[in-house]
Length: 593
Image (cartoon, rainbow, N blue to C red; front, side, top):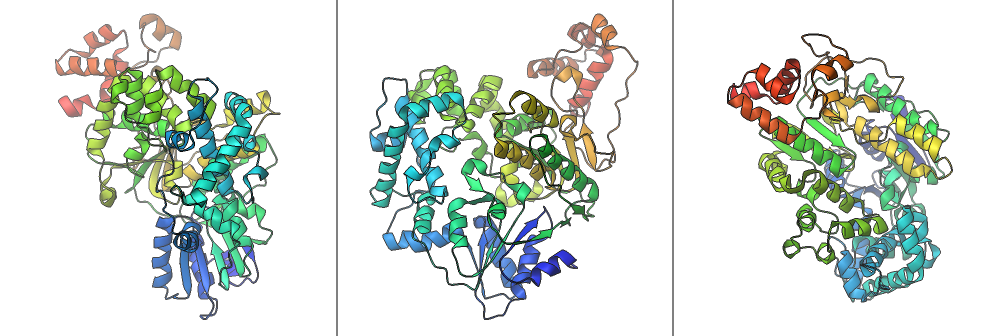
């Protein structure tokens, strides 16, 4: 690949620098060439964001013969310095709420499930402290990261107790009385003021570093290079800080993306301009030079697990010919909360079958209303999404999950997938030939409403991160993108690569189609006869009633029994054209014709 002037400027730079690199701009290539241009006897440390990036980087540096480059993650460095030395035992998945309550023997004040709500906040307070650059837990105010009013009221009432018990739990880990977490040993590494014996330290994905990681990095004597994308910061909920803004180094830019075309680049630029609604945003330049025309890998990307599961359900029920799908991170990671509660636990609580509940916390709840109250007081987003799924689909969930799992393929067979499903967080660092974006992201209309209704209470960093999530989603594509009309910025011109998904009036908020490629443009549907909306409503009483799974099943049975379209239309109170459209959408002719 021919290097750009921006890349050459970085490679030939001296001193501490930071690189703001747009998506697909060849930052890894640039970092490798930077390392290659340094003397062979210089020791270089490359800090990767996670384990998968680490292994990929090891191979790339080795392929270039750069034996003087050591590749680590911040956690792998900390593990070697802290865990081995202190003979700690590390807990793989962190502590569950009920475990913290039991270990500490927590007491409430008679308020329902207070001990578990307190334990949940202790867990978060410890995570907040371990990811910070502070020396002591009392140097932080946990209320700064609690936003829900009901949760804030609860924490305020129990603040001293939550803080003291958080210190006690940290002390138990420090003494080796209980297993330590990954966050804990990284924090202990930071507090030990380590000296890393390297001439250069290259720090990747700087926009999502924790303050603890950044503190370790900035205190080193080595020449420092930090690289990332300011607008790809999406881990604020994990207390990440934008290190590119914190580090006072000379700044360089990588503004040319080799992943996607200028049309996609323009879409990304316009989405980022939404930040101007609430604060001044410095315009960003992205030059798109991607030229691929492949349609091999296709993906559906969502903001939330709930949005993704709803889209996957729609896909497997409507695309019955599809044999292979794949979820980034495996389907099981979408049906379990971080603490271990499963979608089935919530469903069993919903059905009053408490004896079948496996998770101890959920088992303590008498009903779904108690769980909802717990969620409000703890801001447990994942459990909240599970409740929404259960409310939406109820006892159809086992059948639905089975249908998805039956078509889900193994990790090593991902290339066989006809469609890949992922949240934005799990797709970070990935790229696909074509993507469809689910309609669960923030949009311009919501931003304008926030500006009007909540100007004084707006959390700018959270709103900007919501915009970043859409930007990250858009920039995963190498070729084309199907995007809901509500997410399209006002200034975007027509493009053969940007397909706008309109909303069907008779199906509520369900998008017009699931990704079908290749396709040069979205054509208007052909209808038999033009009617005004009022005329259609007057003639067909159920013309705008949403199609449900039950109605689709009923339509399928009638079609298979050979009932003609006229009589089906009469039965459902809809136009014949609407029935034919639904038959086509469900692919009944291909399946049963």
